[in-house]
Length: 157
Image (cartoon, rainbow, N blue to C red):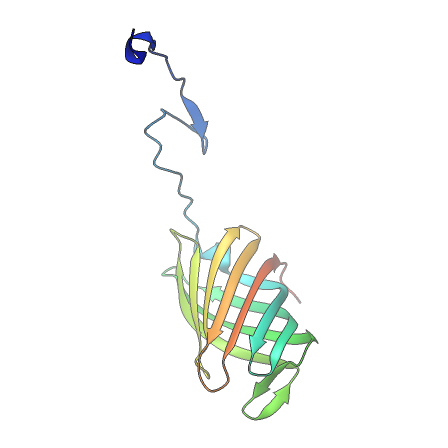
C-alpha cells in the first residue's frame, strides 16, 4: 500500500495569532501599525561606537517630535563613558549634540534621520513600545558607526 493511501486526512484546528482566529495556511503574518505618538519623546541608553579615534562606549539620547505625517524634528546626543571619544572638526570631544530631521514609517516602526550639520544618517526600528534600536553611520574623512538600544523615558521637567 502506498504512503498516500495510508495517510488519513486530519483536521487542523484553527489557531489564535495576534488576537484573531486564523486558519493554518492562511497565515500572512501580523502587522502592528505604530503611531507618531509611539516615537515622540525622550529616549536614553548606552551604545558602542567606532570612529577615526577608535572604539568608545557612550551614553546616548534622542529627543524626538513626530507630526501626524511622520515628519520628525529632534536632537541626538552622546556623552563618553570610556574610550577615546569623538571629535568636532579637529578638536577631541567627550560629548556632542546634533539637530536631526527625518521621517517615521508607522507601518513598519522605522525611523530615518539625518544630522543637519554633518553627514550622519541614523536608522531606527521600534522593537516594542519602550525600546528603539538605532544605528548611526557617518561617512567621510572622520567616519563614525554606532549601534545602540534606547529606552523611552518619562518627560523631564
